[in-house]
Image (cartoon, rainbow, N blue to C red):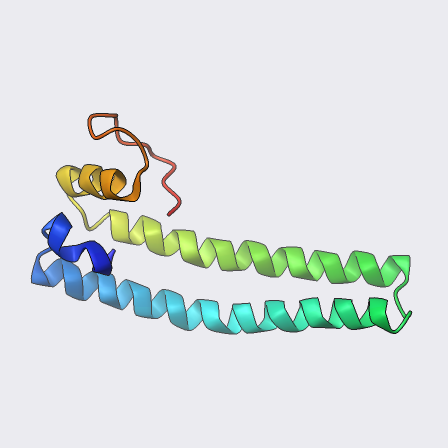
Length: 113
């Protein structure tokens, strides 16, 4: 969003608020990403060392899935919070710039990126 600030006509207040949202999202996402990588490495080691069992596999993949879901939640919640700062023209312009549809297409309410 900040990379497109000029094209979107973001005000200084919007830029400041978007930066704050990004900073909060980043602070929440980085530890989750680190934990996700650690859990994936643990799963890889279990396979490599021949220590994997059906129960360990189920537990490890459930943990990984939960972390992936939480990470996605953090990311998409930031998008939702950011979207609330924009007016309808800025939302339409953002979707156009990101290639989410035709410029005159109705605003989609399931924006993910």
